[in-house]
Length: 610
Ligand code: F6R
Image (cartoon, rainbow, N blue to C red; front, side, top):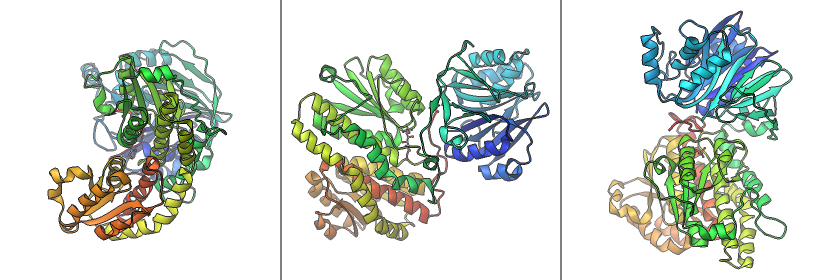
């Protein structure tokens, strides 16, 4: 959330910043701006709205003759989206410009003391205190002024800083908000995320907590928070550039839905060896460790939390260890019962979600062992975990997650089977058979995309005018219904709710009337008869019902208006195939409604604020 990019080198900077920001726009799109050094002065261009507004203002960057600058794309926290609240912010006397991602929690006190010193503020943001602190503390030594400033700040911040006295360098800081450094022969970069600089360099440093970096065109110096030099090891990014581009699709979300068979294959197959055994490279849990756990917490936010809901069913079933699924934003404020007999499974695509990271730290403080499922290598959650399992989904750019959800889910199966195997709760042969089915999941997902897509496009045409939708399901179908409902509401703005099918009659059924759209997930064989009864209840009250089930359940046709058939699949892996048409329904319905699918209103990816 909020994107930062900075560059210093031989090239004209503004087009580079605009290009980088265009690849970071998924992190926020309320406004955009750049600050560049031009003949000893800082020139700021910024505007409310999408990046294109800024780009038009400066002729695609050509109007700014400079080789050093910082840029920002904003997801508003303090102060509405406006030109004034856009970043970069300039200090009152024009000596410093900054871009900031995160929240300064003690900004009110800092602002009050700066106002008492006579400083006037131009915006409502928390960020503006940073450039004014820099101006206050600057006495000819840039790094010292940065240190004095960050020592005062509380909260989270990734910063890009330029000072009018330095034509050849700028500073960046990372504290509880992601930032990487890119290295190249033509200059050096900072960015919130890899896609911003992937077309310029593949050589990067991941900055650590509290690190401060000084960049010139041919040198990068990294310091810890006490300004002691830090030796960094450059990493090589192996992603294909296309993985961060639309590659012929109109939307990243559509591309990422279609990429799921590949992402699943890349995530699952390296974890099953030639003998059909599980190899979880980043996990070092022994049988004794697992036997010692009295409970497992799965903690995450949003869609990752929905993965946890499926995980609870699977892990409890296979290991008989009680599993609690917790929203990360609630976990640390409720005095959770956690000790060294607790395993915490943390799920996060970005690895930077503030609530999830805070829950991880709380759990760790109380003695839990942390096993994380993360998509971004080197992210904070990965760094702070005891065991890490990477999903190999590749960069996920659309704000609404699809392929990260699916790969996280596949990790849940692997973890459950890994534990069941260690505990010898299942026969080796049974585990092998299940793994053999798991390895088929990518193909099944491919088949589901092919067979259901045309029907879903038709349904989207037919139902794009609805204002409300209800998703029902029991058992794992309910967990998938939660994700299906979130997908629809976040990209199409159709009000939607998910219910355990048996729960509807306890209140919510009063909302069902003639024509209300109900999507019933009815793949789970053990409870299908029960779900069918609940479908009949809503049908009797006039609902239009779409049922999602497997091809052997043709009986549901009698109680529904439409049936989306899935291939027969082992019940354990049902969620993996069931979610895919639901992602497509959300996507195509939003497209029919003319929504900006990749950049839904008010949302941003990688939520680094609480
Ligand atoms: C919804 C979505 C969000 C994320 C949530 C957690 O489509 O993408 O609900 O799942 O913000 O993000 P990560 O996984 O990065 O921690």
